[in-house]
Image (cartoon, rainbow, N blue to C red; front, top):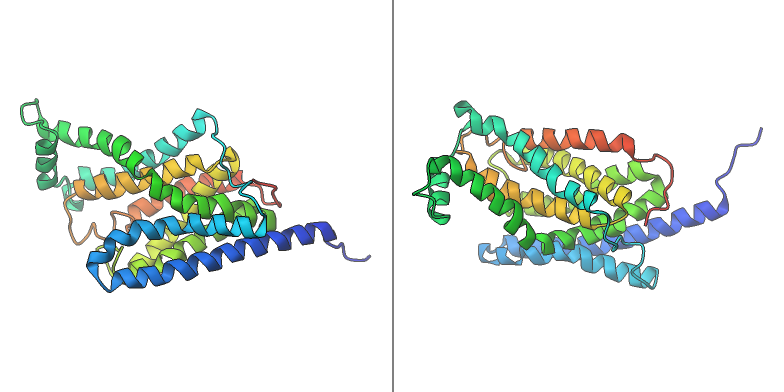
Length: 296
């Protein structure tokens, strides 16, 4: 019996999708990597990091206009409110679960008294009952809302590129599951220079930071790909990305007292957050189709 062949139109569509994907990847790495090295040579240039986060969007727009002649099929539409809410609540949920042991157990760090005192002063809570309890709750709400909203622009810069263009094009070439994994791995690699050059890193050995971050970013990429492909929109992922960055970096990392041990457990380079995101990814991945997708 003769082996079955992939229909020519399917092979052509797959080739077209891969061409679009790799043009975007090449442009993004070629423009962003030199910027990361430029920033690493002078700490005062750290203010340019948001520019690097916006470059994937610019590269995606250029790629779409050159390859397709339009910006369609990038997920610009607004989905139902449930998807937007999921993009906000899921990162709040997994990050809270990841940090609870670090806050509750003094052996793992416990609350940072200096950070709590700063929050009491910032929000003028000294006259409230139990200000050391109220202050973290108020700061949590502040970061989860205001700081998250402020961070939406830079989060959109990444999401328009990685999930707006790359995920659906990879899904047309490889199927949804492989697209989620492959795009997550490439997204992790895009961050490597700022990790290895010391711009963005954890309180642990470099090799440990790279390994844990790679796993966490790939898992987060699967979750964000699931949001993108199921909602047919980039905006839940934008909210999720912004919420994760804000609540982890601007709240939880400041709330726990740093110790040598929790340098391996806390933050985006720690085992606890990585495990929490991986659990979310493990739920999302089987709910993505393994066959080729027409995602847009």
